[in-house]
Length: 303
Image (cartoon, rainbow, N blue to C red):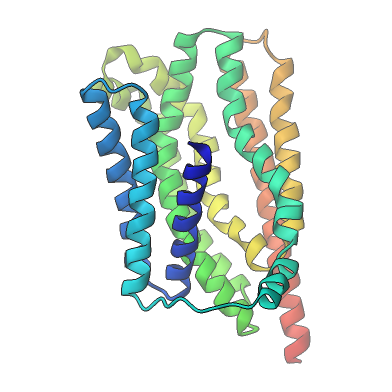
């Protein structure tokens, strides 16, 4: 199943980046809607009829539908298949070899790092505490991550365009940073003041404690929302090594939590949030320095 899933995901990503290159943002967004609706609908259907392994099949068919819909969107927007020589393919592989060379393992570690806290809470405490910890991360974090991903893709197109035109990027970065910080600040204030009441009202009294955990987790979710869209700077400006270095450091910093299995759950969450805040501030510093280096090069060339 995994090779098929990887194939469908690859098709979808290739088409999505091509649409962004052509500034077909509506088509790109409709592909995401297609993925969400098809996967959830099929998974629900297979669950309803009690089909064995329905979640896996629903996810696979949803990704297949998304890939096919994406290809349809590409051809509708003027995509044309062109033949490529083996020499040109070899040239592109050589040109972009730094991506798999320096980013494959760090990207895996980064993805694994996202699940380490959940695994540790389940191991150190209990499944009930784990559900109370992970629930606000899903309810609050997933919508923000989807918004963040959409912003990142639009920002990616603008950065690449400015890079190709040998233009400064700092102004574009600061222009995006301001609304992100404002939205994140409002989110933190609302969550800290009203998260318990909101969770009880929406999900019921049993989830009050999850609302309490959300007060602390809101800081982690907020800083990820601000910094993550900006990280597209690294692949855009061919600074993949810098981004990969941070991913490795982030993994080892999260591994610090392994040594705190005897503290209370609140202390564990606070430590986790502190690590997240520190590492994402470092991430933003590296992003800013990468942009500053690019703009310095642009200034030298133009002068």
